[in-house]
Amino acid sequence: AYDETVRAKLAALNVPNQFQDHHSYDRALLKQANERGCIVSFKAGTLWCNRRTLRVTHSALLTRYDESSVEFFCPDNPQQLWTASRAWFDAGWIGNAVVILEN
Image 1 (cartoon, rainbow, N blue to C red):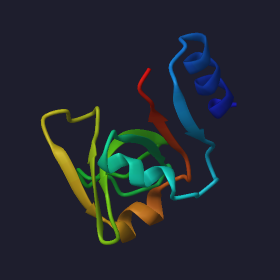
Image 2: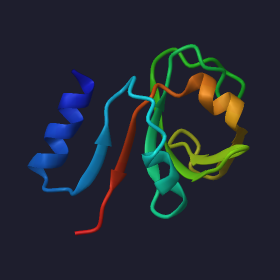
Image 3: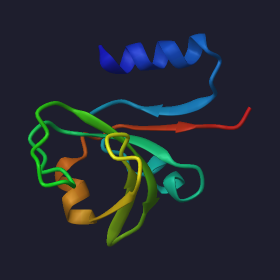
């Protein structure tokens, strides 16, 4: 129900977006991170950037995505951008993506 809730809230606020549900695993929207950012989520159990294991699903703003690594902003630690390997990203990503479009 999470995807439907977020999609409905964005629609109610008239926020133009491209939305990909959890478990879709389509990487097309991820490439937009390099231009405008892309919100993604990580599975519970993922070893997080501060070396703790996520207890619940967690979202972050992907700011760069390429074949070897990713860069993202985590609201838990807004003082820095995190860089991780694509292998780490691929293992933890839950398959969703949200890109906010211009009006």
